[in-house]
Image: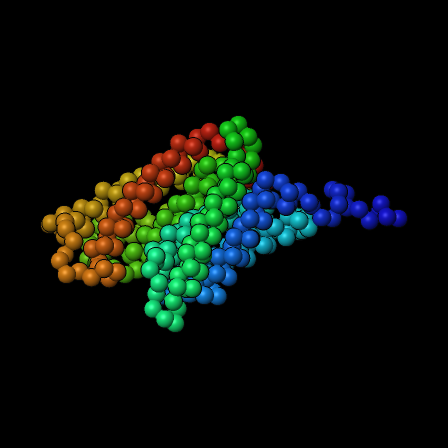
Length: 307
C-alpha cells in the first residue's frame, strides 16, 4: 500500500534541489536576498527612482527564486506549461543583470563612509554598508547559477542555457537601458535618421523578447520552420540593423552639423539631453557587439527547443 503512493519518478520531495551545486546557489540567493531586503527596509532606507529600482529588483528576484526552489523541491514544475530549463536559465541571467545593476546603484546613491545626519545617524550608515555587501553577494550567487547551468560545448541543452540564449537576455536588458535614456530626451524626433535608430532599437527588442518568450513557453518547436535557423537569420538581420544605428546615431547627435560634439556648459547632471544621447550611443555599440557575438555562437549550438 505504501509503495503504491510513491510517484513514478521517485520521492515527492527532490532533495537534490537544495543539496546540488545549483540548489546551493539558489538557497544562497534566498538568504542573501532576504538579508539585503531586510537591511534596507529596516534601517538602511531608500528613496527616489534609484532606490525604488533596487528594492523592486531584489524583491522580484527573491520572489521568483523562492518559486523556482519550491517547484524544484516539490517537483511541481512538471505541472507548469513552461519549458522549465529555458525558464530557469533565462531567469538566472535576468536576475544576474538586475542584481548587478542594483549592487552598483545602491552604494553609489546611498552608501557613504561618513555618518548621515540624525535621526538616521551612524546606525543607518552601518546598515547601508551591510546591505551593499549582501547585494554584491546576491549578484555573485546568481552569476554562479548562470555559470553552473550554462550549456557546455557539444552538450545538448535548452536554448536559453546556451551562450546565444543568455546573450538574448543581455541584449533585451541593454535595450531597456537605451529606452530609459531615450525617455528623458525627445530630440531624436528632429531627424528621420534618429527616428530610424529608435525604430531599430524597438524592433530588435521586440523580436528578442519574442525569441525568449517562445523558448520559455515551449512553443519554439511549433513554428513550422527550424527554430535554430530562424534565430540565426534574425540575429544576422539585427546585427545589420544595429550596425546602421551605430553609424547614424553618433553622426546626428554629435556632428556639429546636426548636434553638439561636446557637453553643453551649464547642463545639469541627471537632466541633460546630451548625457542621454551619449548613453544611447555607448549602449548601441555594446548591443552591436553582443549581436555579433551572438551570431558567432549561434552557428554551432545544439539545443532542444522544449527541454
